[in-house]
Image 1: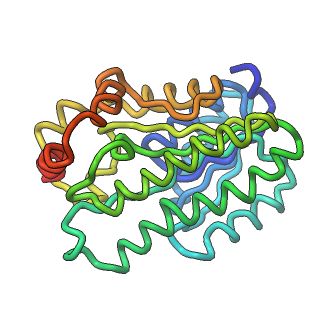
Image 2 (image 1 turned 30 degrees about the vertical axis):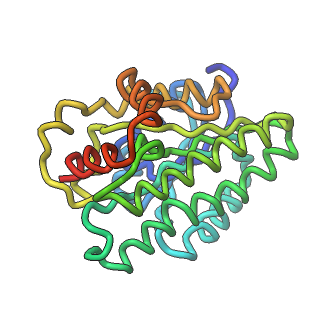
Image 3 (image 1 turned 135 degrees about the horizontal axis):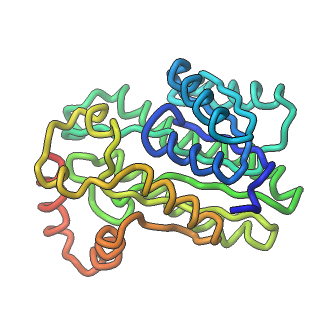
Length: 260
């Protein structure tokens, strides 16, 4: 990972979970960091940790990407730092557990803003300078749901289908210009995701949980290898490949059970 040494990376959703662990991976590689999320206290705690353990500079920005103004506000603040962003990690995202017709529309629209619209805007704003410099990396955090139906997580699963397709397409589009674009597709991971999504304890999910640090390492390695996407975990990778042969009715039944 020596190729990242001295570069600047912007990591969204960096206050906990996969985002925080991706920041740790990048800092260990010598990458300077701009960390953003809503919870400034957690960002500042992570900043202190990273600067104590690694010879890197760390900036923190409190920002809410679930608001339409969020991406522009973030870009304005990053511009004032006057550093070239060579690595963009679009990790910020939320899930909503429940039936589509019963979940609040406002909450589902905020999910689309965060998981799709803000991700797309940030990618566009930062990838153009990368292309001009003929160097850059983008890591978009998708999900195993990108390969499967999402009964009980319909809008979330649809958003991750989008992230995967966008990332794969941009990988081929940008590779001739020295820019790598990768989608990281985790399965169930030990983070705050399910609590925030409103899903209770699920014995099946508890058994399948991966450590977020392991997921982050797989994602950064896949990005540096220029893969269009990488699935975290051998069992999850096998599932992503075999699900295409499973009838939709069976997919729906399984995903509904997982979402309970």
